[in-house]
Every structure is written in structure tokens, then in C-alpha cells.
Length: 497
Image 1 (cartoon, helix red, strand yellow):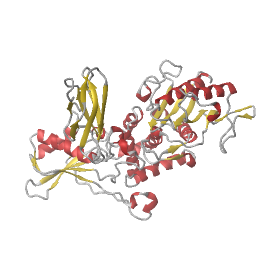
Image 2 (cartoon, helix red, strand yellow; image 1 turned 90 degrees about the vertical axis):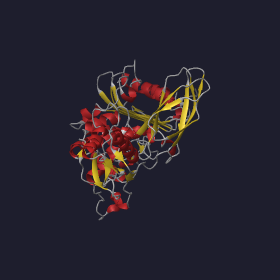
Image 3 (cartoon, one colour; image 1 turned 45 degrees about the vertical axis):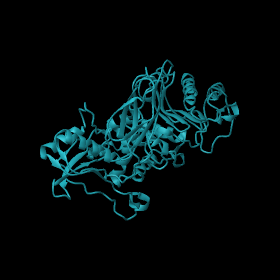
Image 4 (cartoon, helix red, strand yellow; image 1 turned 90 degrees about the horizontal axis):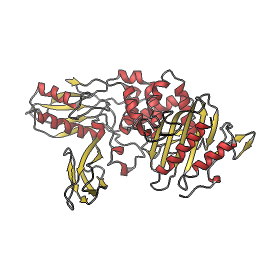
């Protein structure tokens, strides 16, 4: 592994008035010792050549202990969720008071027979489920309600017009769209807006068997080969229903679960409702259709001016599901880093005062950052999840927000939603066996050439430290090689304090 030379890392350290490099204009002197600075620099230099790090560690009073390029802006990946979920938690009372559960309506059909269409209305709920073992927030509950009203309907319509039609944020990489990481965002969401396929080995030399709901058309180009290795891959052109399964699976391999993204969640949810209605003996004579709301200039608060906020007129519901607590959504967003839930939180924030657009959601985030005294030059966000390649944050901006959150009466509860090193969430396999196992509570981030980690950690002395560290420009597919040095550096800092 090639190592970066010492002078390729920009480390701003002050000890007794001696600086290794000039401090950024707004940086405070870093209070640490030269030995720790050299050790951290040496640890980080083990990252792949060309990796650019930014790091800041402070105590809870904001005093910096060590920093590396703290005011430079980096692509943060899912560290973006810190900004979204903190804003959602600050507004949780208003969000909890706003109905979000999906509902169904029977409306007059354009056809004479049957007389009614079914409309499945989405109101921002992220956890609607069509699972056979669903016990809460179940589409089957709505299907049962329709069955009690009628045995014949014409169209089944998916209505996600509560939010404008912005299924992908600016900066979403097109190659992520076919995957569960880049699935479409909609006010009508079901099963995390993803469709699983189960691939099982066939006989040697034969294609594997593929099971799952028949929403997509499958073109099976894969082969079963000797051994137990899984080298499966898949592709679907954005907007297409044709999925190509490629590669190979060993004859002795375990079945593999592929998770496919959904481009039009409202259509998929309506399609699932149709299958449930038919299973209950309800005859559906028409088609599965959708009602989207186009994005308009008035959906951007900067363009809206005196134009009223566009709000759709939803049909009266014959049955609806209850809203679920926003605190649960935040927990399910941060622990496993769930993109769909975070994007829906952003849009629900936008719907509190605006139209439910991305821009309205970002206006709510910006307002909270202003309240938290986060420097405006330290962040620029294009989505709520971190999948956008347009997002930028500085370590100092994130650390400033984390310090402000910790001072709120809800700060401790929000911190509990973060992954815990060596214990759960996206940190369950990191920091195990180190002095930070169970003692670091932080949000991870991972996207193109990027790894990030920001949150709180307990130092050897027992005091709580705030940390934000980001690696950008990690060469090729070596992102994982940047996390080892990152974690080792944090352990060294914690043990030295």
C-alpha cells in the first residue's frame, strides 16, 4: 500500500505558538501536543494515495483539540442525515401532529361500470408495508377496508401529489437509480420503495432460479457454476421495467437477495394494492395509474414570492392508517442509514410551511443551522440523505451543529439514534475490540470516493468529545481502506485525552 508523505496532509496544530501550517482565517488555535499530531498524521498517511482528509475534534465547550483542514468543504455522504434528522427532531411536535399515514378513497369512475375507482393516497409515511407478516402500518388493512365496501372497482390509482414530483434529488448518480440506494422518493411509499429478488443456484451450467413479485420483467443471463462464490450483478435502465440478471452463482452458494430500486413508488404501491384486492375477491376491471403533481416554480421559496403554496386537494378517505412517531423514523434513518426515510423527513419538513418540495425542506434545515450558528460557508446541501454528489460540508460546520444539538433538551435522545461503535447500526463491525467499543456514537457516510464519520466519543478521561472526520478523493473502489486509518486516528485521539 502506498503511503502519503507527511506534507500531503494539511494539519493545523499549535503548541506553544509553533504552527506546522498557517491556520485558516476563522480557525482557533488547536490545543494538543506535537507527539499526538505526528501520530495522527502518520496513521492517516496509510490511506490510499491521493486521499484528502478533513478532521476536527473538540470538547463540549468547543475548544479544539486537533484539526485537519477543518474549514474545507467535503462531500459528506450520509453525514448529511445529521442535518436532516436534527432538523426533524427539532420540529418533531409539528411533524407528529400532521397526519402522515396512507389512506384509501373510492371516487366516481369515468367508466359506467364499475362505478368506482380506488385511490391509494400517500401522505409521507415511510413505513407502509405489504409484507405477509405485517403487523403495523399494513397495506392489507386498507385492502380489507375496500373489500368491505365493494367487490368491483375499475382503476387503482396511486396518488402521491402531496409532494411535488421530485423522485430524485439534484446530483443523484444515475448508476445508483436501479439500486435500493437510489430508489425513487414519493409521498406514497411502500416496502422502503424497493423490490427484493431471491436468486437460488440451479443445476451446474444452468441459469439460477429467480423468485420475487412479478412487477419487473426478468432477463436471466446468469449461470450456475461450481463452488460457492456469488458473482451476481444486475442492471435496469432508469424508467425501464426490464431487469437483466448477470454473472454467476456457485452451485453450493446460499440463495442471494437482490434489492432493486423502484422508479415510480406510487405506481408500485397501487400495483401491490391491486394484487391484494384481487386476492380478496375484488374484481379490478381497469388499470393501475398514478397521480403526480408537477414541480412548479412556486415550489421553491426563493421563487414563490407572493404566489400561494400549491397544495393538492385529496379525496375524502374511507380508511386511513395512523401516523407513526417521528422519533422512530429518525432512529430507523440514522442507525442503518436509510436513504428513503431521510428524504421523506426532508419533504415532510418542507410540507410544514411550504409545498413539500426539496427546496422547502432545505429552507427548514437552513433556518435551524442559522439558529445553531453553523457557518453558512460550511455547508451546502442538495438532498436529505447524502446520495447527492452536490452536497458539501466542512468538519467545523458539522461539529458546530453537533455541539448545539447536545445543548438542547432533546440532544441526548437524538444522540441515541446514532450508531454505536462495535454494537449496532452501520458501526456494528467498527471499533470492536478497541477502547472506543460502545463509546463512540456517530453517523457514518459512504458514497463515491468518500467516507465520513461524525458524532460523539468518550475519551479515556471520561469526557465527551465531538468529532467530524471526512475522507474524500479515495482512489477507485478503495473507500473501505480509508476507514481503517480514520478509526485508528480517533482511537489514538480518545486515548490521548
